[in-house]
Image (cartoon, rainbow, N blue to C red):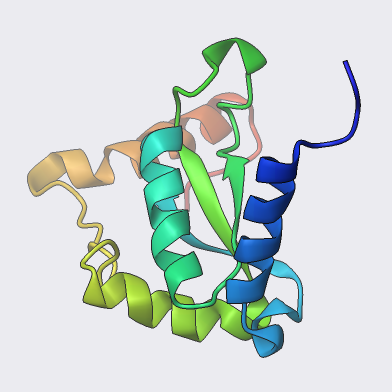
Length: 131
């Protein structure tokens, strides 16, 4: 087998490179969206490319096992210069939300359970003395 790409594949790469806006390629890569699997991530990547925004896929931390193949969550990464534009595209497509989901503690005595457990552990280890 030859290491050179076929003419068809080389033409596809040149076509994709022609769609990217030059100002959008500057800066470090930042996470703009998450996807549940590789197919979903490639869909998001195609949406961004249609708007001239280059992107890269990365396996989400903790799911970087090669045996998972296309399964497992992916992070969609874009250059810093294109982050605002990419976020706007994904907001219009309703892929990401404008505001993150608020995290609320459970109501009642369960809300203080972690603090009590840590306090008792520290008391047991004689690090913390109650006042």
